[in-house]
Image (cartoon, rainbow, N blue to C red; front, side, top):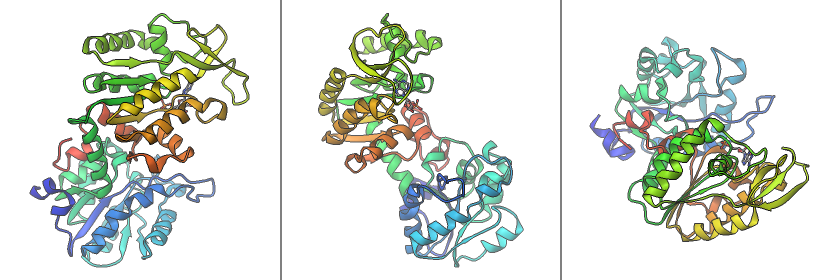
Amino acid sequence: MATAKHGLDGLAIENQRVLVRVDFNVPQDDSGAITDDTRIRAALPTIREILGRGGRPILMSHLGRPKGVDEKLRLDGVATRLSQLLGAPVKKLGASIGPEVEAQCKAKQGPILLLENVRFNSGETKGDVGLAASYAKLGDVFVNDAFGTSHRDESSVSGVARLLPSAPGRLLEAEIEAFQRVLTNPERPLIAILGGAKISDKLAVIDSLLDKVDCLLIGGGMAYTFLKAQGRQIGKSLCDDAHLETVRAALAKAAARKVEICLPDDHVIAEKFSADAASKTVSGDIPDGWMALDIGPRTRGLYTQRIRTAKTLVWNGPMGVFEMPSFRGGTEAVGRAVADCPGYTVVGGGDSVAAVELLGLAERIKHISTGGGASLELLEGKVLPGISALGRRF
Ligand code: AMP
């Protein structure tokens, strides 16, 4: 396992069967056509490097959440797309374990192979050790390039990494480096922006970030539990009453640590959760019968000013219901400010990534994370099993 510490550069690849866990969990339409191949493209540098270094890539991935074999979730379409992108044949196998698969994977040279959806195996998501051993028979070395699944202790992610000489692929390496730059000795000020609807997902992240950041900007639906905890009127805005006490504790921790927490003080409000709802802007309290669906212009201005000062910045979660054009302004303003920020900027989480892409800002963000759940767990300060199993602690 000594090679794992030196990453992909230190892993013996030449004339080796390189088992690679990739994340080809791509969105498909009803006919099974791939609607977005970003995840396949993201794995190309590692696959090309393995080929360039004389190794034979044997790729494996999950797709969707099948319970047993599901014809709609086979990886044949993925193999076709991958082959087009690589300009090389990719042979898709009908299973991911067993004697026939082992026979196909036996030679150290040969076509690129793609195993069948690993989640067709019942033990996969439970991290079954026997299943991991079956995968390990297929390769001489293992590379994990599936950041989006690295927070899961699954057989094809962490299980097989414990059994073969292993290393992170180039995509995983870039993710690790980006979050390390934010979380370990960041250039200051370090600012975090948190938004989105589900406050329960973010409380542990807030608690952990309060030990690290200089300033926390909060927006989106989760802001209203904070405002209610401060005694403000929030109308029928989103609120998680079960977490009011935890939110008060977070506010107290921030005050004790002298971390500035900014909350919205003006809002775009509507009477119903709908794209065509009549809306208006209010400052301070939100009237009964109205719900806040975006941060208001003054808050956007204040957040933009703060963002401008950041030397390091991480953003997770939209500032409002950005899917509806009338409630997109706050996310757009924050997105533009993050794009203009001269510091080191990281955007993580499915919805904030979707927002920067929708707004055409992606190229101006220093690092866009490919993993929503995995990036939140890193921000929580957790060690991800798919990374620690490579012999490298985050
Ligand atoms: P999350 O999955 O927790 O990151 O939440 C993302 C979702 O939060 C997006 O679909 C947004 O539309 C939604 N959201 C953002 N702001 C609000 C708000 N003020 N009220 C209700 N939903 C919101």
